[in-house]
Image 1 (cartoon, helix red, strand yellow):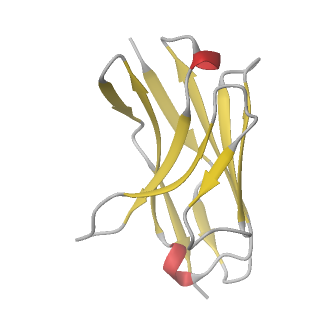
Image 2 (cartoon, rainbow, N blue to C red):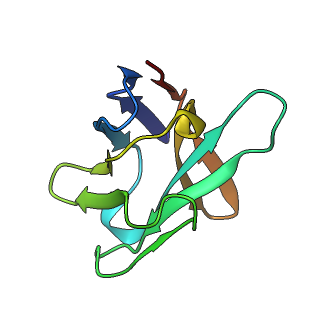
Length: 116
């Protein structure tokens, strides 16, 4: 059974940093692209970043490029999202995501609030 568990969210001031983590179980983590998405009330879920199975290639939404960094540790079945220079518009629930055998899997999400 695929499980994704996010952690690391919280309240941070504008310009601050947070590091999100997602622990994965129930599948061969090192074989799959991993994604981070985010969602605010009334809006569609937005892809933030993704990373290839071997960690060799990453992609970012334009809104976070240069501020966020996605990484993974295949030995620990974990994917991270380092978020720097946070802005109020980064406030959202952040979700870890994997697509496996045509199925979509999501974690429960972790709230990130950027406010002074």
